[in-house]
Image: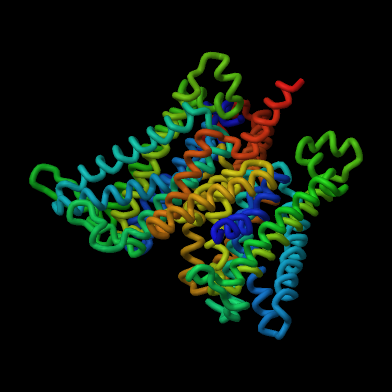
Length: 355
Length: 283
């Protein structure tokens, strides 16, 4: 709950996010093109964790289904953009993919929350939905499975999906490489600020109320089914956006992106980072993908073993979430020092501002 | 029949752990895989098949005991954290097995040959699997309803605090439950090790089916699992028979979704409601 109280205060979380923001905005200037490309991928996956933070961390809906919307976004974008086969239409494909995912999430949310399904059962239903889609797409090899002129491709997935491109006047350029990086990071920062704003607005507080006690919020006059559906559908859109970014980055999508292991990964990441804290979730997601890639690039077969070990350790030693614990420790460190400083200079806000 | 025994066997270990402890064991598939490995390896070393299967079961039980003492013990009553931890366990086990044993293992072929009824060939082994599934269910029923252990475990499941204050060592119960659940997983792995190729991903084939069965079954590991295994088994085999494997699989999942939507507490919740209603009208 401390993130509710301390909205106006400057703490280590905000400073870290500001520093990270500046570092990553300048990142393409100092890093190689390869690193920038990798970072774009990590940041695309951050949206997926973000969506789970919104519905699980904030609203308290436990969902395994974010990868389903990830897949819907990815496949829908691939279908629309490849059917048009025209670079100027990729924006339409992006919007179309998001709308499709939004409608699906709205339907599923309506189906569940107005039916009174809650708690762990939401997680189980969403898991089933994800697996249905993965199974369906995995068997869709062969020429009878196609939408328009594009084959679904079964287990092999879809290749050569075009990247996003933007047309301003007569200038048209594709969002690849550094352009793509900046597109992703700007949208990411935008969404981060928007979600933080929402978290401390009326909407965010109603979501938290639902997370803390569903019955009480209902008795106080909140329409919890509606709010849950809203949160869930917005989470679905975020996940779909992540999917679109992923296919525009790699040009490739396959059903394994929705399998049971892929479905559990966001849950694991959000839980390990500390599910109540958006900044923590984002940092940990990037860190996880960074580590898993570093470990697999270095050719070590022990990569997954080490990752599994880290996850278990995190849960056993810092159950609140690793990043959140670090933030709290830093805050405690600085606030005690600040108090000491305040005795001398009597201007603690200024002191805190310099960190 | 085939899918009935498959669903029951793959789900029962998971159902016991989930129903009793509220721990969602994402490493269930890897536990099954470990059982299959132990059975196959001891079989190749010349141990007779039934003993090899029992060895697999015991081996995984011991492994479950170690895992519980090291990790799960700290996570009682924290289902969402247990998801993360068991996910970590499954990563370690899957990759560790790949490193130790390589991508696949040539096991012995399906034992016992086949027989035919009315022109259709049945493998005798698969028939035995079905019988074993039924026997296990009966055994579980007996253990839960007619032994001291069963009584204590049901008490722990219903209300942990009261059970503890009445002198039941609940954390010991949880450990035991986890071991029993692991043993069933190992047994399943051992039984099916003769019918499938064995590799580090052996368990993932079970994971989805076992989850769906447990979901539809609800919190009661016994009645719930049997009934959902039966129902889903019928749906699955009927659809597979008429439309093919794929539709069977999707049908299984769709049936599960519809079922949960209608009765969110699964078969056990549905049954409890019925029983309560009967009791009320009687009293």
